[in-house]
Amino acid sequence: MVVYCGMGLRYHRILLKISGEALGGAKGTGFDEPVLESICKGVKKAHELGAEIGIVVGGGNFWRGRSSGKMERTLADKIGMLATVMNCLAVSDALNQQGVDTEVMTSIVMPQVAQPFTRSTALKAMADGKVVLFGGGTGNPFFSTDTASALRAVEISADIMFKATMVDGVYDKDPHKYPDAKKYDTMTFTKVLEDQLAVMDGTAATLCRDNKLPIFVFDLADPDNIAKAVQGTAIGTLVQEN
Image (cartoon, rainbow, N blue to C red):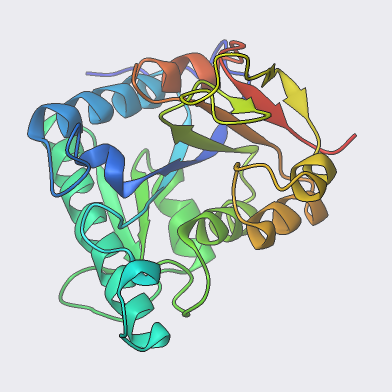
């Protein structure tokens, strides 16, 4: 039996954004079962600390609409939305296997798959101790899963949005290409937008800034970082407006 005390938490309700590629491991496509299991162990540790957790998963391990060639954009984006639902179901199942109760909600009505998202049902599920997974993006084309994450985070009144990436924070340039890249411990959304830093798209950054929702960017290579982040450990870059 797990005792949820919530003590020692810096953030009590979070929205965790995970890229689809992260679920694919080194290949970045499909599912890498050991990686999926490891990520879910990290989510479980944060959940056992008492954090209320909502998750948005990208769909890039199955489909990237902007790279779909001649396909009409709105159709390509709809396929991408379905990819995110598949990923949510997979993460939900992996968490269930580890003893974590979950609820999958979608922005697109598909009752045989999951219940539609509403703020009240999501908050109730989290209050009941479930990890809630939000699939289908915003339900509209032309909006990224970063924007969907920011939207859901604001809707559920999250304390913060966690963006789990393959880099340990925000840099002034790609640290994989430039050894002299400078890492930021903190920064503002205004700087992200003005300098066009590769944190998230402009729509998501603006939504977070306007709703005073901070973002914490950290490395998912060590899934234990999720639990460290909810405790406020400085393992990445905190983005918020002054």
